[in-house]
Length: 105
Picture 1 (cartoon, rainbow, N blue to C red):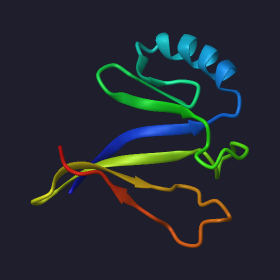
Picture 2 (picture 1 turned 180 degrees about the vertical axis):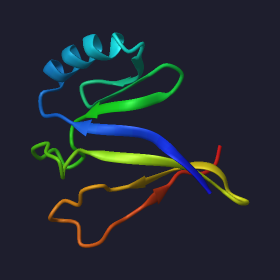
Picture 3 (picture 1 turned 180 degrees about the horizontal axis):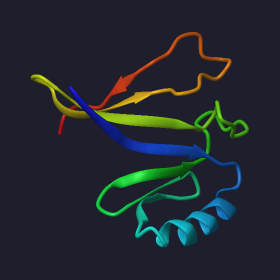
Picture 4 (picture 1 turned 60 degrees about the vertical axis):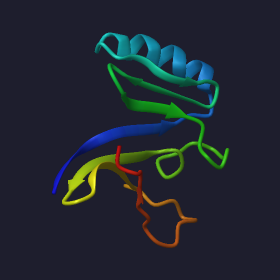
């Protein structure tokens, strides 16, 4: 199985301020808004979103354990390439680690 980072997401409770910052900062790296669901979430990249800024799913305060995730894209025999999301830091409310898999394209 080969694996690469599919995307990284960071949470924010001040999307207006975060988007102003990331629009300017990521433009210097050649990234632009690819998917825009503002004020809830925005994905930046070139062809596909590589970096997301978003409100935490539970609408609580964004922190290292709430609103942050890293998704890996892995190729598995017979399954094709699909992103696999694995939490890097578990929030206190998480009893066990979880992984989710998108359907292969």
